[in-house]
Image (cartoon, rainbow, N blue to C red):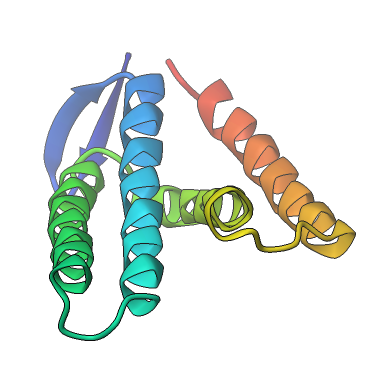
Length: 129
């Protein structure tokens, strides 16, 4: 456990719990993009279009609340750096749901970014008390 001082408030949190929650809200954010693209593929004004679009807005609202909650316990520089995980989710969802090609360039690019995230995260977690 570590006590993080953020704007003169003390929070007692476990870093792994924060990271699971953080990555969970980023998965929600990626799902909202999936719903947005799915809505764009539907004829405008249909019930399915509005349902997908409404779902996208609902997920973005949940994401915004989660983002504010995580910023109370994790420094902004750490939280924002972890946002790159949405590249991975976008690649997976694009391939699985929309049949987008999975090229070597995309795969290597996401892998490089994820390795950087893992290296930075291991340094951040090693500073845990």
